[in-house]
Structures are given as structure tokens and as C-alpha cells.
Amino acid sequence: MSQTDELVSKFTDFASLTWGSNTPKAQRIWFLVYEPRQERRIRRSLGEFELAARRLCHRWIDLDVSGLFGEWMSANEYREAYFRRGELTESQFKEFKKYVADRIRELLLDPQVDDETIAVIHGIASLFGFLRISDLLKNVENDIRGRLLVLFPGIVQDTTYRLLNARDGWNYHAVPITI
Image (cartoon, rainbow, N blue to C red; front, side):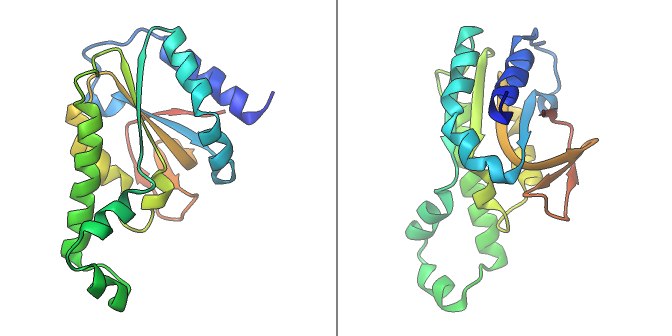
């Protein structure tokens, strides 16, 4: 059985459990944790995860965040200064973080989303170095109605998550789905 097949199986196990409506918001977040080198394979297999969710009568809605920096930068009036300087100012970091949080919030507040919906975020490796995933999720967790599945290329040890296996990790109360 491939790693992808194992993760689909583990995901199916989690999605098939009864979802309590009184579950704390932070614990409505599931991190599908896998080795960073598996990123393309997992994203290519996203349809298998969706099919598993739909078989369990859950709705599925997703957002690829990998292009958000380009979208945000192309609309930014100070983009030329960024390209000359090669780094963002503190206020630009905050603006970008708000932009990403707003896009995720749009996903979570979509009229189709209800308590039985799995909202999925993928492509978060593209945000590495621009913002902290933990801060981002804290900004949107109150808007989660069903479950939020974050495809997470990295590692988890106890409750410490490391995106792209970076040295800097954070503690978080999300539910890890691992092999």
C-alpha cells in the first residue's frame, strides 16, 4: 500500500467518526501530515480524499493557497518597491497575512458550507517564510462550521508541528492525521 493510499485510509477513518457540535474550534482542524517530498503526489490524489469524504456524506470544498502571494503582489501598489528591495516591510507582511486569512474565511463562510462540510486548504508550503500557519489558523478558526483539513507537508511530534520539517515549530491543538 502506498503512502497516499494509507493517508486516504486514515483520513477516511477520521472523517467517519461522529462529529460533535461542541468540539472546540481548534480541534475541528485536521492536519493531513506527510513528508514534504510527497507534496505533488498527495495533491495529485486530492480527488481520492474528496471521494472518500463524499462517500461518507460530507461536502467538500477546497482552496489552493499556492498562488495567493502572486495574486496579492500583483494588486499591491508598492510591488515595484518590493522587487527593488527584495523583501517585505512589516506592514506588507500584515497585509498579506490578512489577505490569506480573508481568502480562507471566504471558503469557510461559503453558503454551501455547513456542519458536515470538510473545507480543505492545500499549497501551504508556498506560504513558508511569509507567515506562520499557526497565526493564520487562529485568525480563521472561529469561522469553522464543519472541519478544516490542512494538507501539511512536514512533521508532527506530540503537538509540535514543523512545516517543511523546519527547525521552527509550534504547538497547536489540531488533530494530526498521519501514517
